[in-house]
Image (tube, rainbow, N blue to C red):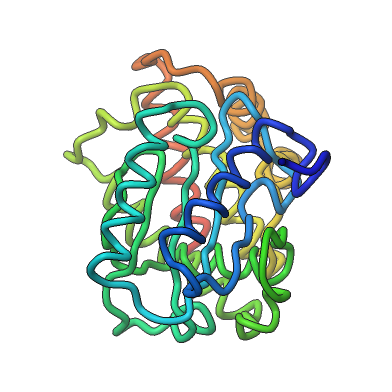
Amino acid sequence: MTRPGWPTPWPAVNLAVERLLEGVGEALGGGLVGLYLHGSLALGGFYPPASDVDFHAATAGPLAGPALERLGALHAGFKAEGGWPARLEGVYLPPGPLRRQDPAEGRLPVVGVDWDFHLGPPGPTWVLDRWVTREHGLVVAGPEPRELIDPIGPDELRAAVRASLSGYWAERAAEGADLAWLRPRNYQAFAVLTMCRDLYALDHGVLVAKPVAAAWAARRLGPPWPAMTARALAWRADERPDDRHLPETLALVAAALELARPAG
């Protein structure tokens, strides 16, 4: 039975997390070392109408064969069910990749709201996620995450942010790119708030909740950031397409990419 107030203040979220813990435990047997929540749940910006339930599962070793099949079936069932179980988004990390990011590391099991369970390549945002788990993660099961994850310093964090901006975001927002994914208002909100978070991280060397970063950007950067951040916060759960404001969103992403360029 789910314990009241554990590990989050939202009972329905807790039930999904406890089911994840039970399901992964059954799928991996003794191969589950720990389960941790990161993202907005850990940083304090969780917004139930729109937020995902981000997790890291620490495994005793690399996963293959039957274990992957069992996990795939578990998450396929969650997806079909809908609700919070379908909004679980995470990575299964063996000791080495959990402790430190290796650019040569192979693909690892991932699942997300917009993608099914599969083996995905590590990217720069994995550094950010591991920082949140280490510094602020909610322990569902297992040892303290600082025992499993090496320190991630401000310079490493900034490098990961710049890599994400100059890679993923520059490519997705480039002239001629397919922008269908960015048409819904909630994805435009995601883009704007991610720019705020990343610019805050470049300035401060730490990550904060996106609403906190949005308030900082509105104060620090001036127009059009105040109006754009206010709109983004209001649009987080709005799935309607909005082509009228799409050029403004793209312009803000372009402005953030320029601000993120190293001086000189």
